Length: 339
Ligand SMILES: O=CC(=O)O
Image 1 (cartoon, rainbow, N blue to C red):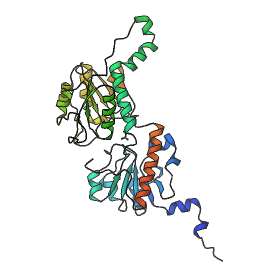
Image 2 (tube, rainbow, N blue to C red; image 1 turned 135 degrees about the vertical axis):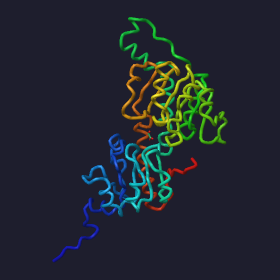
Image 3 (cartoon, rainbow, N blue to C red; image 1 turned 45 degrees about the vertical axis):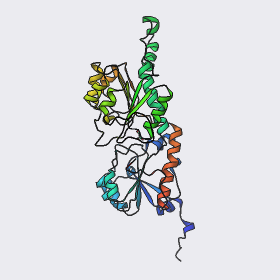
Image 4 (cartoon, protein in one colour; image 1 turned 90 degrees about the vertical axis):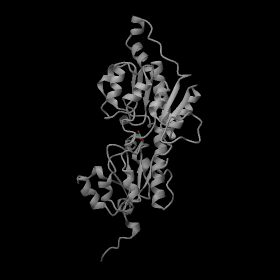
């Protein structure tokens, strides 16, 4: 006599197989940092392309009709036209990153695919680190820490003085969520904030510079807070660094390639700018070795967005976005082009 497999007889694994699939091309760093279980849901099932022995295109073709969403976790796994073409049922790309430079946005728009990013969850952490890097560069915190540890205080006397944050002219490049949080913090520290953005923001009274070179010429610290796009790649080039000048410092918590890194190294080596605080680099995790010998440069391994607190908020947002999409509800942090 045959046995009818009713729904209640299904194993948990079989039940999961019936759920809509969300494909992942690489493990999001947040999985190992706060545990994959924080991203679990009974509304969808993660399909991990990186666990398969099949080449990616073959893997995607095999599952193409059950994959409804992509969970992207930034470089180096692009969501491009070739990938999207293999996944006709995908209606949303949810990303664990604040930056969207790994996603072919025009191709998503062309296919009617929605995009949800990390929204505001990282803004405070990134802004805190931007200010931390700036204070460190100006007041030589890391450099004097090294000096004390090496026993040089007792052997050689005092370390050279740093420079005051309050009263500095801070130029924010990119006044989105993160840039705005940086601006608020620096204002509270007594800095004079001005900014450059694609458009002047009606909601703030900070002076606006349409030209980033002009902004650099009128500030002591340039803080790079924008995303990477064709428009912003190497936007901070020789002319901008020269305009920032010998006393100027730069902080980058956006993306490495927004600055022409070779040119920045040259300017730092020749004293054409005074210092840098960098969380992002052009060819991560490789960092130009010239930086290692520079006491006026503070280096951070692309950690600005990551605290356990923000990652917990991220997991709720990611699951919320995917569940909303699968229930035909509005996304919680939909990316809209005019932002
Ligand atoms: O840099 C990190 C991110 O974009 O989330």
